[in-house]
Length: 108
Image (cartoon, rainbow, N blue to C red):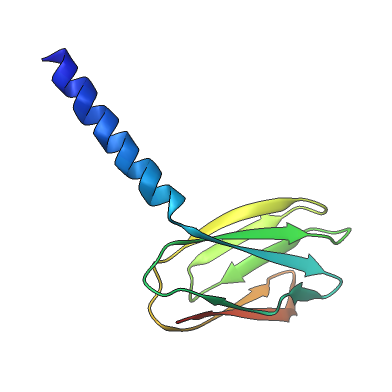
């Protein structure tokens, strides 16, 4: 009985690891007063990983009402944000500490 539970658990963990490995990863940098790149094309229907790096000397906050995400990015550090799967469309994001700093994800 214990060996069956072990095998089932191992299969489940293997499936989860494979699903995690399939997440597409995209990098985004907050540099001066802009996102670089300001526009990222991502695959629709798939969970994606955004690695947001803040090169500024002050904290920033990645925020998007459409993506339902908000995350403070300390000065000189980076954070990872998972979103999706997304439907095809355009999803706006901005720096909540400086709302004029904007960008967008385009899911295709």
